[in-house]
Image (cartoon, rainbow, N blue to C red; front, side, top):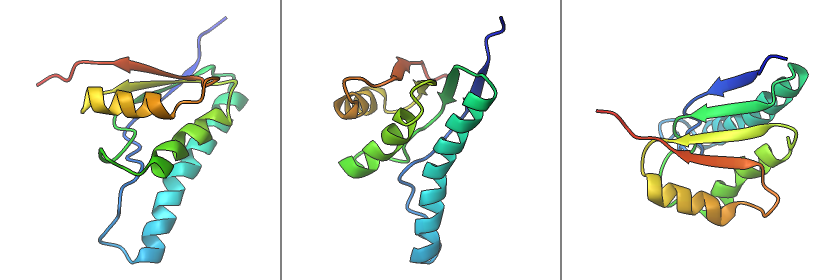
Length: 117
């Protein structure tokens, strides 16, 4: 049996898109979240048990709790997929922020990686 997984990078959830009109910025932000659902659904249809997110899940530190919870809720909707987040920057604060938002039954795994360079 082969191990299948999907690899994605840099979701940048919470990106403000200030250079676009408000309506378009909102649509772009929503599209980033909708993509999480599409990745989860695609992983399931392709029998991939893991999604590896190698990059910045969030655009910045200090985002409102509502924004921080949005991708976690989307990932949780796909419980048959294990989401592995490889955090690259702002490690400690981001990990603490994510862990404070995780539901007790969460299927999101956090792993620190060293940033090179």
